[in-house]
Image (cartoon, rainbow, N blue to C red; front, top):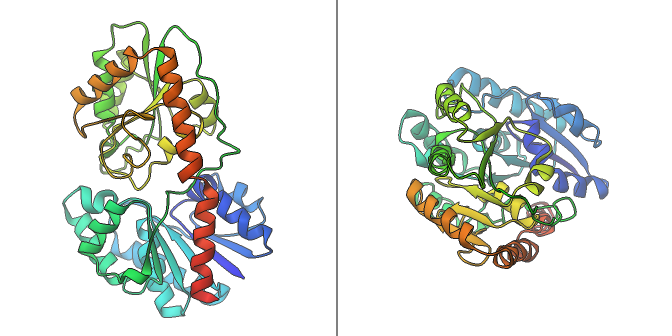
Length: 367
Protein backbone atom coordinates (compact mmCIF):
# COMPACT_ATOMS: atom_id res chain seq x y z
CA UNK A 1 0.00 0.00 0.00
CA UNK A 2 1.21 3.51 -0.79
CA UNK A 3 0.28 6.20 1.74
CA UNK A 4 0.69 9.95 1.28
CA UNK A 5 1.20 12.25 4.28
CA UNK A 6 0.29 15.86 3.53
CA UNK A 7 1.24 18.71 5.88
CA UNK A 8 2.33 22.32 5.95
CA UNK A 9 5.86 21.48 7.20
CA UNK A 10 8.26 18.56 7.32
CA UNK A 11 8.73 19.56 10.96
CA UNK A 12 5.12 18.57 11.61
CA UNK A 13 5.69 15.08 10.20
CA UNK A 14 9.01 14.63 12.01
CA UNK A 15 7.72 15.69 15.42
CA UNK A 16 4.11 14.50 15.45
CA UNK A 17 3.74 11.66 12.91
CA UNK A 18 6.99 9.72 13.30
CA UNK A 19 5.41 6.76 15.06
CA UNK A 20 2.64 6.46 12.47
CA UNK A 21 5.07 6.72 9.54
CA UNK A 22 7.37 4.07 11.01
CA UNK A 23 4.40 1.81 11.67
CA UNK A 24 3.51 1.77 7.98
CA UNK A 25 7.13 1.37 6.91
CA UNK A 26 7.55 -1.61 9.25
CA UNK A 27 4.66 -3.32 7.45
CA UNK A 28 6.33 -2.85 4.09
CA UNK A 29 4.03 -0.02 2.99
CA UNK A 30 5.41 2.82 0.87
CA UNK A 31 5.17 6.30 2.35
CA UNK A 32 5.43 9.61 0.52
CA UNK A 33 5.48 12.95 2.32
CA UNK A 34 4.14 16.05 0.57
CA UNK A 35 5.33 19.16 2.39
CA UNK A 36 7.40 22.30 1.83
CA UNK A 37 11.13 22.09 2.40
CA UNK A 38 12.51 22.87 5.83
CA UNK A 39 15.48 21.60 7.83
CA UNK A 40 13.57 18.41 8.72
CA UNK A 41 13.15 17.27 5.11
CA UNK A 42 16.44 15.38 5.05
CA UNK A 43 15.67 13.77 8.40
CA UNK A 44 12.40 12.24 7.22
CA UNK A 45 14.03 11.06 3.98
CA UNK A 46 16.48 9.12 6.17
CA UNK A 47 13.50 7.11 7.47
CA UNK A 48 13.07 5.63 4.00
CA UNK A 49 10.18 7.76 2.79
CA UNK A 50 9.87 9.64 -0.48
CA UNK A 51 9.62 13.36 0.12
CA UNK A 52 8.13 15.68 -2.49
CA UNK A 53 8.63 19.41 -2.06
CA UNK A 54 5.34 21.27 -2.50
CA UNK A 55 5.40 24.94 -1.44
CA UNK A 56 2.60 26.06 0.85
CA UNK A 57 2.00 29.33 2.66
CA UNK A 58 0.81 28.13 6.06
CA UNK A 59 -1.04 31.31 7.05
CA UNK A 60 -2.76 34.07 5.17
CA UNK A 61 -5.07 34.07 2.19
CA UNK A 62 -3.41 34.34 -1.22
CA UNK A 63 -5.77 32.84 -3.83
CA UNK A 64 -3.10 32.50 -6.51
CA UNK A 65 -0.64 30.70 -4.25
CA UNK A 66 -3.34 28.47 -2.82
CA UNK A 67 -4.61 27.56 -6.30
CA UNK A 68 -1.06 26.73 -7.36
CA UNK A 69 -0.69 24.47 -4.31
CA UNK A 70 -3.98 22.73 -5.06
CA UNK A 71 -3.05 22.09 -8.70
CA UNK A 72 0.36 20.71 -7.74
CA UNK A 73 -1.21 18.49 -5.10
CA UNK A 74 -3.73 17.18 -7.62
CA UNK A 75 -0.92 16.49 -10.12
CA UNK A 76 1.07 14.54 -7.50
CA UNK A 77 -1.98 12.47 -6.52
CA UNK A 78 -2.45 11.57 -10.19
CA UNK A 79 1.21 10.65 -10.78
CA UNK A 80 1.99 8.92 -7.48
CA UNK A 81 -1.41 7.16 -7.16
CA UNK A 82 -1.44 6.67 -3.38
CA UNK A 83 -4.12 4.31 -2.11
CA UNK A 84 -4.90 6.81 0.64
CA UNK A 85 -3.75 10.24 1.85
CA UNK A 86 -3.49 11.41 5.46
CA UNK A 87 -3.59 15.19 5.84
CA UNK A 88 -2.77 17.56 8.69
CA UNK A 89 -3.23 21.32 9.30
CA UNK A 90 -5.91 23.58 7.85
CA UNK A 91 -4.79 24.21 4.28
CA UNK A 92 -3.46 20.68 3.78
CA UNK A 93 -6.84 19.33 4.94
CA UNK A 94 -8.81 21.60 2.62
CA UNK A 95 -6.79 21.12 -0.54
CA UNK A 96 -6.10 17.42 0.00
CA UNK A 97 -9.83 16.81 0.26
CA UNK A 98 -10.47 18.69 -2.99
CA UNK A 99 -7.55 17.00 -4.76
CA UNK A 100 -8.83 13.64 -3.59
CA UNK A 101 -12.25 14.37 -5.03
CA UNK A 102 -10.82 15.03 -8.49
CA UNK A 103 -8.34 12.13 -8.48
CA UNK A 104 -10.26 9.43 -6.64
CA UNK A 105 -7.77 9.26 -3.74
CA UNK A 106 -9.45 8.73 -0.35
CA UNK A 107 -8.37 11.37 2.18
CA UNK A 108 -8.38 11.17 5.98
CA UNK A 109 -8.13 14.65 7.51
CA UNK A 110 -6.87 15.39 11.00
CA UNK A 111 -8.27 18.59 12.53
CA UNK A 112 -5.65 19.09 15.21
CA UNK A 113 -7.10 22.43 16.31
CA UNK A 114 -9.58 24.97 15.05
CA UNK A 115 -7.03 27.79 15.09
CA UNK A 116 -7.96 31.24 13.86
CA UNK A 117 -10.91 29.92 11.87
CA UNK A 118 -13.06 29.98 14.99
CA UNK A 119 -10.97 32.02 17.45
CA UNK A 120 -10.51 35.19 15.41
CA UNK A 121 -13.19 36.90 13.37
CA UNK A 122 -12.10 38.36 10.07
CA UNK A 123 -11.66 37.74 6.37
CA UNK A 124 -9.12 34.91 6.68
CA UNK A 125 -11.29 32.99 9.13
CA UNK A 126 -14.38 33.41 6.96
CA UNK A 127 -12.54 32.26 3.85
CA UNK A 128 -11.11 29.23 5.64
CA UNK A 129 -14.51 28.28 7.04
CA UNK A 130 -16.13 28.56 3.60
CA UNK A 131 -13.37 26.41 2.09
CA UNK A 132 -13.78 23.85 4.86
CA UNK A 133 -17.49 23.62 4.10
CA UNK A 134 -16.77 22.93 0.44
CA UNK A 135 -13.77 20.66 0.92
CA UNK A 136 -15.13 18.45 3.68
CA UNK A 137 -18.04 17.40 1.55
CA UNK A 138 -15.32 15.46 -0.30
CA UNK A 139 -13.20 14.26 2.64
CA UNK A 140 -13.47 10.53 3.13
CA UNK A 141 -13.04 10.72 6.90
CA UNK A 142 -12.26 13.43 9.46
CA UNK A 143 -10.55 12.98 12.82
CA UNK A 144 -10.95 15.57 15.56
CA UNK A 145 -8.87 15.67 18.73
CA UNK A 146 -11.56 16.52 21.26
CA UNK A 147 -15.33 16.40 21.57
CA UNK A 148 -15.75 20.19 21.82
CA UNK A 149 -14.00 20.76 18.49
CA UNK A 150 -16.09 18.06 16.88
CA UNK A 151 -19.36 19.62 18.05
CA UNK A 152 -18.38 23.19 17.21
CA UNK A 153 -17.06 22.24 13.81
CA UNK A 154 -19.97 20.05 12.78
CA UNK A 155 -22.39 22.82 13.77
CA UNK A 156 -20.67 24.95 11.13
CA UNK A 157 -19.71 22.32 8.55
CA UNK A 158 -22.09 19.54 7.58
CA UNK A 159 -20.35 16.15 7.92
CA UNK A 160 -22.20 12.88 8.39
CA UNK A 161 -21.57 11.04 11.66
CA UNK A 162 -20.17 7.95 9.96
CA UNK A 163 -17.30 10.03 8.56
CA UNK A 164 -16.16 11.45 11.92
CA UNK A 165 -13.90 10.12 14.68
CA UNK A 166 -12.01 11.45 17.72
CA UNK A 167 -8.32 10.79 18.32
CA UNK A 168 -6.45 11.28 21.62
CA UNK A 169 -4.26 13.96 20.06
CA UNK A 170 -1.21 12.85 18.09
CA UNK A 171 -0.39 10.26 20.73
CA UNK A 172 2.85 10.10 22.68
CA UNK A 173 5.83 7.79 22.29
CA UNK A 174 6.04 6.56 25.88
CA UNK A 175 9.51 5.13 25.26
CA UNK A 176 10.90 8.51 24.19
CA UNK A 177 9.14 10.63 26.80
CA UNK A 178 10.02 8.74 29.95
CA UNK A 179 9.23 9.97 33.48
CA UNK A 180 12.14 11.73 35.17
CA UNK A 181 12.68 12.83 38.74
CA UNK A 182 11.71 16.43 39.36
CA UNK A 183 14.92 18.37 40.11
CA UNK A 184 15.58 19.33 43.70
CA UNK A 185 16.59 22.93 43.05
CA UNK A 186 16.22 26.01 45.19
CA UNK A 187 13.96 27.62 42.60
CA UNK A 188 10.78 26.27 41.02
CA UNK A 189 10.79 26.47 37.21
CA UNK A 190 7.52 26.91 35.31
CA UNK A 191 8.05 25.99 31.67
CA UNK A 192 5.89 27.06 28.74
CA UNK A 193 6.54 25.52 25.31
CA UNK A 194 4.64 27.33 22.59
CA UNK A 195 4.73 29.47 19.49
CA UNK A 196 4.97 33.12 20.53
CA UNK A 197 1.47 34.12 19.44
CA UNK A 198 -1.41 35.73 21.27
CA UNK A 199 -3.79 32.75 21.27
CA UNK A 200 -1.28 30.56 23.09
CA UNK A 201 -1.64 32.80 26.14
CA UNK A 202 1.93 34.07 26.07
CA UNK A 203 0.90 37.45 27.47
CA UNK A 204 -0.90 35.83 30.39
CA UNK A 205 2.21 33.75 31.09
CA UNK A 206 4.40 36.88 31.05
CA UNK A 207 1.94 38.76 33.28
CA UNK A 208 2.04 35.95 35.80
CA UNK A 209 5.83 35.83 35.60
CA UNK A 210 5.98 39.58 36.20
CA UNK A 211 3.89 39.14 39.35
CA UNK A 212 6.51 36.76 40.77
CA UNK A 213 9.52 38.71 39.50
CA UNK A 214 10.78 39.67 42.97
CA UNK A 215 10.50 36.13 44.33
CA UNK A 216 13.92 34.51 43.95
CA UNK A 217 12.63 30.94 44.25
CA UNK A 218 10.44 31.09 41.12
CA UNK A 219 11.58 31.01 37.49
CA UNK A 220 9.58 31.26 34.26
CA UNK A 221 10.91 29.92 30.96
CA UNK A 222 9.33 30.29 27.52
CA UNK A 223 10.50 28.09 24.66
CA UNK A 224 9.03 28.53 21.22
CA UNK A 225 9.27 29.89 17.73
CA UNK A 226 8.97 33.63 17.24
CA UNK A 227 7.44 34.38 13.85
CA UNK A 228 7.18 38.13 13.18
CA UNK A 229 5.24 37.44 9.96
CA UNK A 230 2.42 35.65 11.78
CA UNK A 231 -0.70 37.83 11.93
CA UNK A 232 -1.17 37.05 15.64
CA UNK A 233 2.46 37.21 16.72
CA UNK A 234 3.50 38.93 19.93
CA UNK A 235 5.39 42.09 18.88
CA UNK A 236 9.18 41.84 18.98
CA UNK A 237 9.37 44.87 21.28
CA UNK A 238 7.06 43.21 23.80
CA UNK A 239 9.05 39.98 23.81
CA UNK A 240 12.31 41.94 24.17
CA UNK A 241 10.86 43.83 27.14
CA UNK A 242 10.04 40.62 28.99
CA UNK A 243 13.54 39.29 28.37
CA UNK A 244 15.43 42.49 29.21
CA UNK A 245 13.45 43.00 32.41
CA UNK A 246 14.22 39.46 33.55
CA UNK A 247 10.53 38.55 33.61
CA UNK A 248 11.06 35.37 31.57
CA UNK A 249 13.92 33.33 30.20
CA UNK A 250 13.36 32.84 26.49
CA UNK A 251 14.80 30.31 24.06
CA UNK A 252 13.92 29.71 20.42
CA UNK A 253 12.37 26.35 19.58
CA UNK A 254 14.68 23.50 20.52
CA UNK A 255 14.95 19.85 19.51
CA UNK A 256 16.20 19.14 23.04
CA UNK A 257 12.72 19.38 24.47
CA UNK A 258 13.13 16.23 26.56
CA UNK A 259 16.11 17.71 28.40
CA UNK A 260 14.33 21.01 28.91
CA UNK A 261 11.23 19.38 30.36
CA UNK A 262 13.45 17.27 32.63
CA UNK A 263 14.91 20.46 34.14
CA UNK A 264 11.48 21.95 34.88
CA UNK A 265 9.13 21.52 37.83
CA UNK A 266 5.81 22.08 36.06
CA UNK A 267 4.47 22.92 32.59
CA UNK A 268 2.16 25.84 31.96
CA UNK A 269 -0.10 26.46 28.96
CA UNK A 270 -2.55 29.40 29.06
CA UNK A 271 -3.80 28.66 25.52
CA UNK A 272 -7.16 29.96 24.35
CA UNK A 273 -7.95 26.64 22.65
CA UNK A 274 -6.12 23.50 21.47
CA UNK A 275 -6.84 20.31 19.55
CA UNK A 276 -5.10 18.18 22.14
CA UNK A 277 -2.04 19.97 23.44
CA UNK A 278 1.15 18.15 22.45
CA UNK A 279 3.14 20.22 24.94
CA UNK A 280 0.98 19.07 27.84
CA UNK A 281 1.13 15.46 26.69
CA UNK A 282 4.92 15.53 26.54
CA UNK A 283 5.12 17.09 29.99
CA UNK A 284 2.66 14.61 31.43
CA UNK A 285 4.50 11.65 29.88
CA UNK A 286 7.68 12.82 31.61
CA UNK A 287 5.87 13.05 34.92
CA UNK A 288 5.34 16.76 35.28
CA UNK A 289 2.44 18.51 36.99
CA UNK A 290 0.48 20.69 34.56
CA UNK A 291 -1.16 24.10 34.81
CA UNK A 292 -3.43 24.98 31.90
CA UNK A 293 -6.41 27.06 30.89
CA UNK A 294 -9.77 25.37 31.22
CA UNK A 295 -10.46 25.07 27.48
CA UNK A 296 -10.90 22.27 24.93
CA UNK A 297 -7.63 20.54 24.16
CA UNK A 298 -6.18 21.34 27.58
CA UNK A 299 -8.85 20.16 30.00
CA UNK A 300 -8.64 16.63 28.52
CA UNK A 301 -4.99 16.37 29.59
CA UNK A 302 -5.21 18.29 32.87
CA UNK A 303 -7.60 16.94 35.46
CA UNK A 304 -7.95 19.63 38.07
CA UNK A 305 -6.44 18.56 41.38
CA UNK A 306 -5.36 15.17 39.97
CA UNK A 307 -2.32 15.90 37.82
CA UNK A 308 -2.33 19.68 37.95
CA UNK A 309 -4.62 22.70 38.00
CA UNK A 310 -6.93 24.44 35.54
CA UNK A 311 -7.40 28.21 35.49
CA UNK A 312 -9.69 30.62 33.66
CA UNK A 313 -8.76 31.38 30.07
CA UNK A 314 -7.38 34.88 29.31
CA UNK A 315 -7.14 35.53 33.03
CA UNK A 316 -3.64 36.09 34.40
CA UNK A 317 -4.97 36.53 37.95
CA UNK A 318 -6.51 33.06 37.81
CA UNK A 319 -3.17 31.69 36.57
CA UNK A 320 -1.34 33.49 39.38
CA UNK A 321 -3.70 31.96 41.93
CA UNK A 322 -3.01 28.45 40.63
CA UNK A 323 0.74 29.07 40.65
CA UNK A 324 0.39 30.17 44.27
CA UNK A 325 -1.54 26.97 44.98
CA UNK A 326 1.16 24.86 43.35
CA UNK A 327 3.90 26.62 45.33
CA UNK A 328 2.02 25.90 48.56
CA UNK A 329 2.21 22.13 47.98
CA UNK A 330 4.82 20.04 49.72
CA UNK A 331 7.19 17.78 47.78
CA UNK A 332 5.08 14.67 48.29
CA UNK A 333 1.98 16.38 46.95
CA UNK A 334 3.88 17.55 43.87
CA UNK A 335 5.24 14.04 43.34
CA UNK A 336 1.70 12.67 43.42
CA UNK A 337 0.58 15.11 40.74
CA UNK A 338 3.59 14.07 38.67
CA UNK A 339 2.84 10.35 39.03
CA UNK A 340 -0.79 10.96 38.07
CA UNK A 341 0.30 12.79 34.93
CA UNK A 342 2.28 9.81 33.69
CA UNK A 343 -0.54 7.42 34.58
CA UNK A 344 -3.09 9.48 32.64
CA UNK A 345 -0.94 9.49 29.50
CA UNK A 346 -0.27 5.75 29.70
CA UNK A 347 -3.99 5.02 29.98
CA UNK A 348 -5.37 7.44 27.41
CA UNK A 349 -2.74 9.00 25.13
CA UNK A 350 -0.30 6.27 24.08
CA UNK A 351 0.54 6.76 20.39
CA UNK A 352 -0.33 3.11 19.75
CA UNK A 353 -3.97 4.05 20.36
CA UNK A 354 -3.71 6.59 17.52
CA UNK A 355 -1.97 4.11 15.23
CA UNK A 356 -4.67 1.48 15.83
CA UNK A 357 -7.43 3.98 15.08
CA UNK A 358 -5.80 4.95 11.79
CA UNK A 359 -5.34 1.28 10.87
CA UNK A 360 -8.98 0.44 11.57
CA UNK A 361 -10.22 3.45 9.62
CA UNK A 362 -8.01 2.71 6.61
CA UNK A 363 -9.23 -0.89 6.55
CA UNK A 364 -12.84 0.27 6.50
CA UNK A 365 -12.11 2.67 3.65
CA UNK A 366 -9.95 0.59 1.31
CA UNK A 367 -10.24 -2.91 2.74
